[in-house]
Image (cartoon, rainbow, N blue to C red; front, side, top):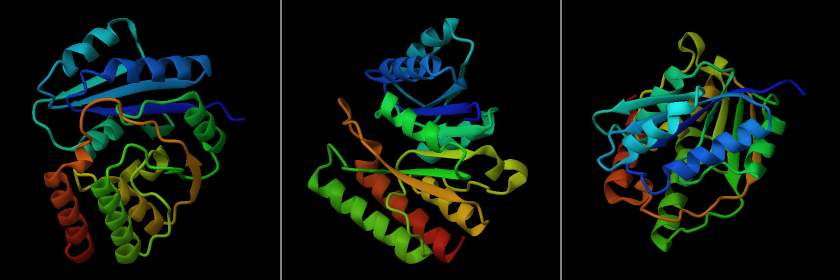
Length: 231
């Protein structure tokens, strides 16, 4: 199998309780696998101790790259920043609240060069309230209906071959949660290839997921409609 070269992007907003464990998991798994990697953490305007914890963690880790944003831009904006900083052949986006696991990395590494875009879908969405299940259903229905997409999960963990972003092939325009779907839609429209596979989701142990906030729901809906009818 071709050696894997990957930039792992971890967006973090007020994740002081979990960010160290997330970084420990990524480093341990990637080093054990003998992967050529870098870990890019985008501290998206955190107001707690997330930034200080990240700085301390990376003191003796040359593969670590940190970007501290003064103002919170949103999940999409953080990922876009990480993509712009990435230097490896593959780009892998992992949320801090669902750390990398050995099983997850094994699946993605097996499929790393099967397509231009690797899309995982959750076997089960764990830790979801009834309202979050409803929000998720509506979100996926809108993406499928408005953009004629036929994937099982638009809003989970993806890996991209960096060539899809080279020379402006895909330009990310949105900073909210819709950004992951935006990349998939634009990659499909540009003729890039996809592979999709099932993964297990680990349950968030602390804090509140940003996507569950009313403001995030409204913002996401606005971005979807803007891109479909105006963008």
